[in-house]
Amino acid sequence: MSPRKRFKELRRTHAAVESGINALENHGLGPCIGLWLEGFERYVALSIVARNIQLLGRKLQEKELEALQARRSPRRLAA
View (cartoon, helix red, strand yellow):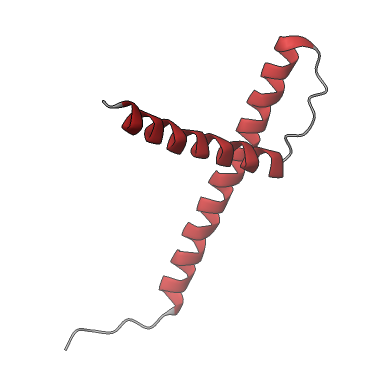
């Protein structure tokens, strides 16, 4: 792989990582109050778990809404 292509690939990966960090910051990851590396690792892990729970909750709400809309909409038969 050429250096230019590799750089572009790494730049896209970096953007994805920055997006993930931003999502964590918006859902509770702030300044780390734990001391040393062990506290930091625990803090980041808990933030990731919290974000995943939030995403799962959103997916469940979307499924529920789709099911509710399917029940409410009249079914039409093909002509």
